[in-house]
Length: 99
Picture 1 (cartoon, one colour):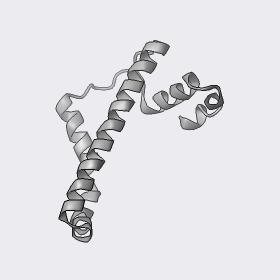
Picture 2 (cartoon, helix red, strand yellow):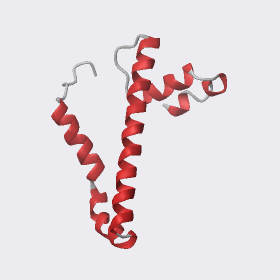
Picture 3 (cartoon, one colour):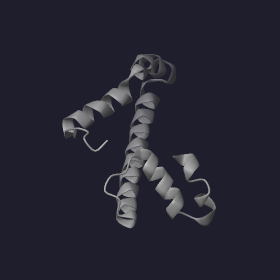
């Protein structure tokens, strides 16, 4: 895993767009038609804000965990496991399950 190629910012953006759009893009016209234009646009913006906030929390959590554990590279399962291990006492026993 150490020999993996680093991706550029543009590559990362393309992967995010590919994951976000995916096959769900086919359902968007039906959703907009059913909910109406103004409600659909408003909910789409709200969903974007929530997704951005969650991604920001994930990055901040990763940075905090990296500082506390002194690990150089954390994957998503590593972040969730370490968050449980560093969190409250009752969450410690669930750490492996979140991996």
